[in-house]
Length: 440
Image (cartoon, rainbow, N blue to C red; front, top):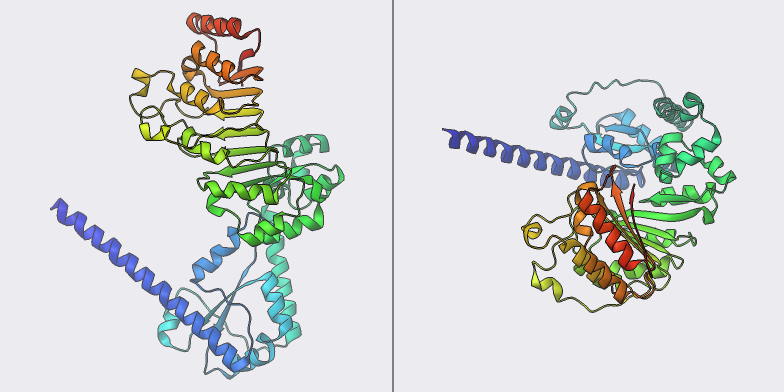
């Protein structure tokens, strides 16, 4: 009985999915057909949103900026309506109307000539007015409605300035921890003149072409010094071309990057790049990452890897068969694993307590110009990082290394064993390297 119940449930989900897919396909075909009819009968029309009405309503919120939100204009077409035809011929095909809608609205059209199409809008109440329309009053009404929508968004947004009473110095300090996108969403576009006045440097996240053009009008090019990309959104060529105007980019953060060849683009578009930061949602293999570092060019001095943990290299012999590489530009390396356990999900801890440190040293010793190394973890994972032999190995192979920092997230009070290990490492390395453990 339970098996039959599960099967029925699965069949229902499949049938529902198929019905939804067929409905979306029908809506797409209808709108595309409506567009073709407009081009045939009126030779021009607004740009129509192709998709369901629900998707059209969700589309404005895909932007990270409230200033880019646009209301949805639903246009209802009836082929047998004389008023409808006059409206299209005299108003809807107007270049002025078309351009205004393109900049300020998402236009979703629907044809209700057929009864079946009317049923799709059965939950909506449509009111028709016999008031005579002209291009001028239609444009006025559109402008008034758009202003009302913008005002609603401004009202809903948090007025940080007036409600907190914070002074400018405090606000500017807060902004250090936000991307420009977040700052605009929090403070509105009113924050841009302040940033411009004080020449504050900012980071931008996944900028659209519209966002880039807006920045060019509000800020100096030199103020944009950092970029961050989710590699699922890795910028298309036109966006990269637009970003090339920001010639002062010194920092680049990439989330979940696995396409090694993408690194080679950095040198072309960001010739002043100094800091490169990789962020991963899961464990990462430093040995697989090694060839990627081979693509770096001489300007990159700081390399960071943020991840949940390291893949145990010695547990998979194939991971040792990687490209031989050397890097002579990196001077600072950060490995940040502070959110999760240091150890992979295998029996590594039982047999190789310091495997993460061993793998990390293997990776770092190829950075021939490394000066400062920082490893960050939680207070529960400090002991595996206190392996004296591994730190001696690194010091031997990296001649200019002069500082090692273990950053501990959480208020750590070392036990007697850990304290003895720390003191022993410091004593062994003191002639050449400053070894320190500090709470973050």
